[in-house]
Length: 123
Image 1 (cartoon, helix red, strand yellow):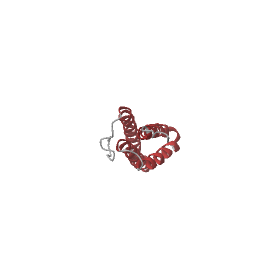
Image 2 (cartoon, rainbow, N blue to C red):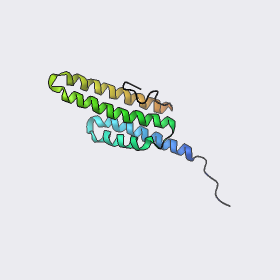
Image 3 (tube, rainbow, N blue to C red):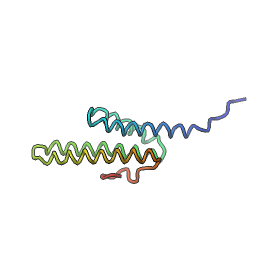
Image 4 (cartoon, helix red, strand yellow):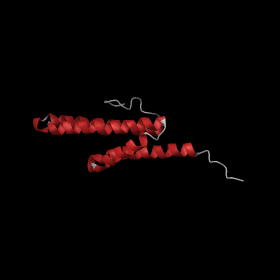
């Protein structure tokens, strides 16, 4: 008699995706210190976006957008640092990133999707 089919397979995939999403949020936080971890995080989020369910896809899209928009803010701040407005842009980028990451972690923990994953503000 063949073995019974394991009905927990979709749930296992969701648990794995949850772990990947949490890891990306943590990598983004570590990116303030190491930089390279944010790059690793966006690679993971980009790869997992296409193969995840709707709930987790919203988190992965949010993470990818957080990286690229944050990189734009950081580059603009760097370019304008000579004119002192760059420091204000860097401060905005830091606060903006922290809010997005913390909001994402809270929603992930609650099992809720990101409302607007492509938003330029806080989702």
